[in-house]
Structures are given as C-alpha cells and as structure tokens.
Length: 155
Image (tube, rainbow, N blue to C red; front, side, top):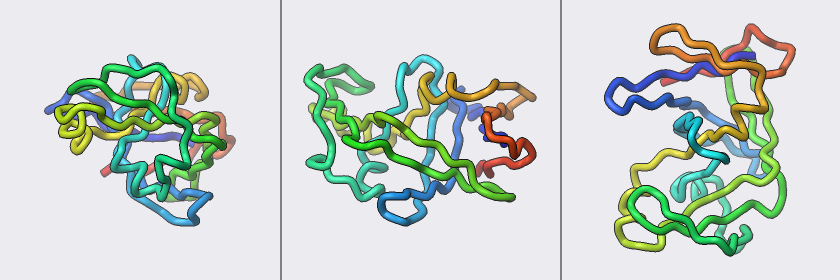
C-alpha cells in the first residue's frame, strides 16, 4: 500500500491528510500530519489529542520537558499502544503506534503555536516502512503491507 503525501509550496513541508479510524473510540477523524524526517518520534498535536477522545489523565507525562516551536512544551505518552487505520480509496492501512507521544504547550506562545501546528509523523514511523519515493511535489511512503496498489487520499 502507498501513502501519498503532498509537498506544500508555501511551507516546504510534506503533508499527509487523511481520515484515520481510532480503534479505542470506534470513530473516524481527519488528521493533518506533517512528515518530518528531523523529528525522532511521531507527536500528536493538542487539538488532535482532544479529537481522539484522550484526556491528559489518560496519558503518562514524561519527566523531561522539551522546547518546541514557540516555547516550552510538556510531552505525554500513551499508556497503551494506539492502533489507527488510514483510509484509502481501496481499503485501509492499519498501523499500531507503540508509544505515541502528545505535546502540550507550557507557555502562552507555545499554546498559540499549537493551535496551527499539525501532528507530526516522525522518523520512527517512516523507518518502519519500506521506502519513500519522490515524483515532483508528490511523495510516496510505501508500506510493508502486501496491498501495494492502494493509496491514502491527500486533500
């Protein structure tokens, strides 16, 4: 299966925009991911955490604080693996995040930035897949799934 991403000329970032199905809440939500090869891990934005139906009390706060875009952030981790299904034209692609991270701004400026910040697909997600190819402004993340002809729609 192929996950099709699109290069944003305005931001020079790759975005994967897709509906994902959350096993734990049995619902579909729209998530905008920025594909970030400079990020070590996948990190869900605060607004996506809320839409996923997860309270901060459902998560484990990591002791180490971090600096993010806009200022200091607290990082949380899911206590259990979270399975998501990316919807495509011909089916879905299931992926289990073992230790999905979430961030929340500690400063006013960090909380302002998180309102527009997408969730991040980091190198941990990317390296778990077969390969990335480029065709102009469209990039493809090929999964290890045997259904290689399916793709995730990009808005």
